[in-house]
Amino acid sequence: MVGTFSLMSIEDETAIRQIVVGVSHEIDHRRWPELRALFAETVRVDYTSLFGGEPQSLRADDLISTWQTRLTSIEATQHLLGPIAVAVQGPRAIATCHVRAYHRLPRAPGGPEWMVAGHYIFELTNNAGWKIDRMKLETLYQTGNTRLLEEAVPLAQ
Image 1 (cartoon, rainbow, N blue to C red):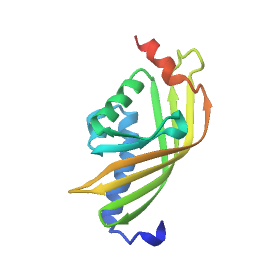
Image 2: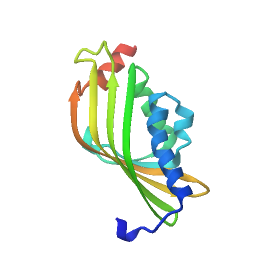
Image 3: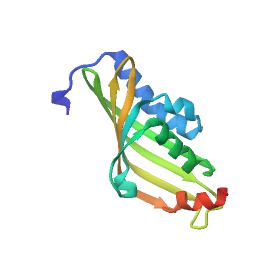
């Protein structure tokens, strides 16, 4: 990757890092409109290492709506990212980082906590500003209640 990507401006690197960090902050604070603003109109999402299935191309509005529905009944989340490595080539960029995603729901039958550890790969495009148009989670391992999201839905009703 390093050989095919060129040097970037400090402004581009800073903007890309802020967008990637913004994803975790906006999700954890449940700021859905601000989260939506970080994404292009269509996003290729790959969570197959966590949930199985196939990567999907989604409208960003649908992606954010799905996250909102799944996380609204979770008491707290904390997504820790870093370090963030950034490479830019023209109007495209790749940002990679470690992730620890903590989820807490004290009333969950299978246990109150679920943690996912892995790496994120964000791809961004610059079309009058950097936006995420691809994201992939490479899950390394999970601890705790791996059914926490499914258990949260009945508790919310």
